[in-house]
Image (cartoon, rainbow, N blue to C red):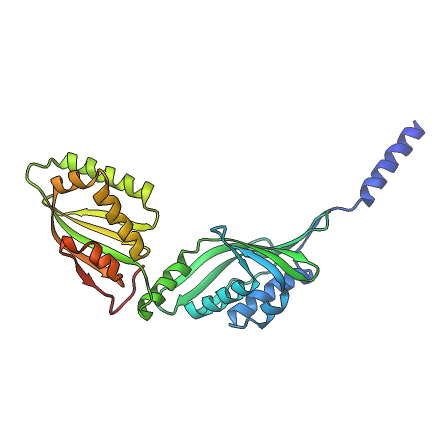
Length: 288
């Protein structure tokens, strides 16, 4: 019995002396993460240049990978897009925004932050506020990897607004006024529109807006299409005329007007001129 107790005691003693993973919230690495965001809010990047390894990689929420130079350029770009950047206070009480650092048995060290990004767009004037999560892998006293987990829409919208105001936005769109031909059954028209929409979703990934808007009397439809660039719109024209959708479309609708919006290329204008297209360029405001 004494031997059993002694053996049990040795097992407990041995277990207590084994190394274990641990989480810290006020260690030096967690403080460095806090300072990174303090510096960003103050629109300073020198500290980031120092604390991130020259060999670092950053992966955003679209799984796109960037090196350190590209990462720093991205931070500078963010500072150009937004004013009044701020983050919530962190007090290490696990009751809101937090920073913690995990020290693992295999020697890996990761820091993570959960917080909210608040700012005012310089080009839209819109206030934004959204939650984000970022994880950082350490190599010694430098950050070697960063992984971002948040929606990029606010950044993309502001970048689009800047490009529109600077005249460099490549996005184009069609605003097409259609009248529904006599003899076209409304339910059949809806079935056709469902078919056209499914084709767009499957075959034209660079079309980011595609909608049909019907009048109250159900006699007219406004079709709005938006593309990332002129080449994507040319692809749409090729698919439309070379596929099976053109005949049922023209049987169901008459094109009353066709407006091409955005900084469209001459190649696009020439490609669709047979439809009586009227080009319009942006001279004010912004567009997504």
